[in-house]
Length: 287
Image (cartoon, rainbow, N blue to C red; front, side):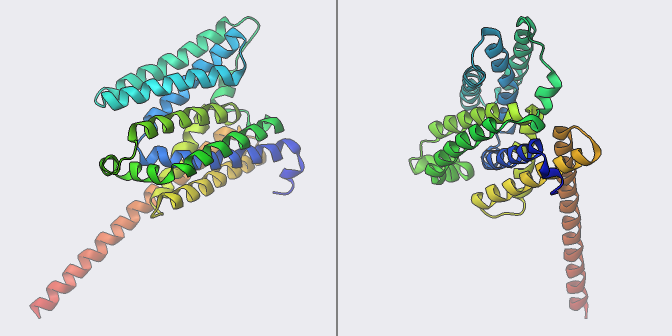
């Protein structure tokens, strides 16, 4: 590990992975608990439309991407609140159109040739220190916002009807959460790529949910899983000369399927114990 860290680009990559894991671990927990995975995927893909718009009109990256993603995210949130039966269709359409518009705008941008693979899997090995400071600063603001509304988010996540009875502004919190997701995606996607953002937002929280009993514990364990995947994936990519983003996602996928297998084995063992206990109880009654 120390041999890897002697290179500055690897130190920056590890720091970027740790920051992305912490940010996505916290936000991803709220996404998974509130069942917003598909909507978050739509926001992530729509972010590409903002990237294309920013380059086409010569705007700063963050202004174009954040603006486009926020508008798309709020539209998706409004649709999902008003027409839940058709929400998946609208989100799917915006998902496809947002990404297609970004590709077309980049194609029409004079003198700019985009590498789609670098966008999909990111360029974590070429992250400058300025990006790390930006991620840390925006991440800190997001954490402060979530910490301030944590109790209301907790109630809303597990019982929306009870939250409404208690006077929690559920709709405003919902829009705020979707807006935070949009900002998180735009901030992290330029560093680690679109697919890795979706993976970090979903896989660690899903695994952590099964081994924790509170929202805070789930957030902490999600961050730990995310760091394990990013650092482990970076080591694998460095050792075997593989694409870093793909290695991180593949490692996370392996652990994900192993957790599913472990769940099945534990459930099978539990059923065997119950069957044996029933058989023993039946034998006692016969005796």
